[in-house]
Each structure stands twice: as structure tokens, then as C-alpha cells.
Image (tube, one colour):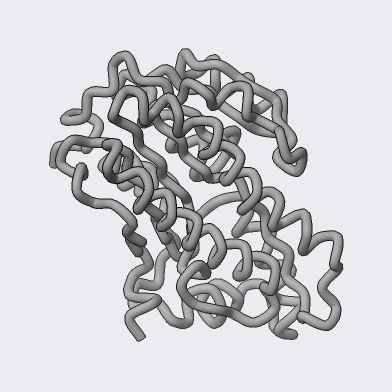
Amino acid sequence: MTRSVDSVDLQGRTAVVTGAASGIGRACATVLAEAGAKVRVLDLDAERANEVAAAIGGEAHVVDLTDPHGGIRVADDADILVNNAGFQVVRPLEEFPPATFHQMLAVMVEAPFQLMRAALPHMYAQNWGRIVNVSSVHGLRASAFKAGYVTAKHALEGLSKVAAVEGGPHGVTSNCVNPGYVRTPLVEKQIADQAAAHGIPEQEVVEQVLLARSATKQLIEPGQVAELVLYLCSPAAAFINGASLTMDGAWTAQ
């Protein structure tokens, strides 16, 4: 089977990927670079960001996205913006730390807003741009103990749609990709948290909690999400705009 990267030419394009030092972000940075884009790897982890940038011939930028202006300076000439950075905290709502709730909104909603705001004038000027927001099935459905994450992803969905409606006349698309549980450090970390919250052993979390709604009892691989992100940057996806594309093994179908 031909990979998407083999049919997408991003030579001359500049891509900004947040949270690109690991997981989905790293996979996105890699496939975009393989398609010819010059990729800016944004992450708080300087060592791993530099490692990824060196591996793909990109640029590493150490950015704290809780800073309202973090990353803006490297997004103002971006042709492609992938808002991927995020983190998870699992707590009952009445115990959810307010400061953490605010921080999650800052990273997963305010930062994408600021980066879009910085990138759109350049995209509009050239009548081409691609914004891909890595959302989640939790941007479409709720799960217990995830007040911050579910709220942030739902807000990101709305922001993405506004960018789609405004950007469409200028050749700019904005879409969300909505994976289920992906084999990333973020998911691996929450297995222990989920075990504590639900009072079950860790080995039962994946099947009984994470994949309970999924007809396909496997974690998604980061590269599979990245291939969908890359497709949304292709000519074939020019009329996919304002969409939320699930890849969840039928998690949201039931």
C-alpha cells in the first residue's frame, strides 16, 4: 500500500508542530518533513525537541505554551500549523485542581488561538494554509474524571470550526483529528491514574476503561494519526474543512 507521504509534496512549505518532541507530535513532524516541509519542532522538553529536529532536518524551539505569547514568533510565516500539544490529568471533578484546569485550557485552547492568530495573515496573503488541530474523541464525548481535558478539547473543536469558516474564502482549511487512545507517553502515564480512580489493577485499565467503547481492542499508533494529519495537507483534502475526523475503532459509534 502506498503511504500518504509518497503522494504529498510539501516542498517549500513551513510547518509548525506543537508538542513535537514525542508521541503524535513527533510522528507528525516526521511525516511532514518526509513530504518536504521545513518543520519547526515546538516543545517544552529541549533535549528531545533538539533530538527530533536533528533527526528530521528541522528546527527546535523550546516553548512554554502556558505563556500566552509562547510560540507566536515562530508561527507568523507558517504555512501549516499542527496544534498537538496537550497533557492529561485524571481526577474527580470535585477534586480537580483549579490551577491545573486553567493550565490545560492555556495549553490546549489559548495557545492554539494565539498560534492561529499569528499564522493566518501569512496564510491569507498566499491564499493557502492548513491548520490541523489534534483533538480527541474527548472533543466529541465525555468521560468521567477528565474535566480539564474534555473541556479543553471541546473548546478546541469550536475554535477550529471558526477558523474553518473564516479561512475557507482565503484557501485556508482548519480541521480536527479525533483519535481514540494512542500509544503515547500521555496515555501510558494515565493508566496508573485511571487504575487509582476506578479502583482496578493497571492491567485491566486498557481493556475495561480505555478501550471499553472501542470495537477494535488495540491502541492506535502515533504514525497512523500522523498519516491523517498529512492527508489533510494534501490537494485531495482541499474541501475537507471544519471537519472532525474520528479514528477510534468505532469508540464514538456506540
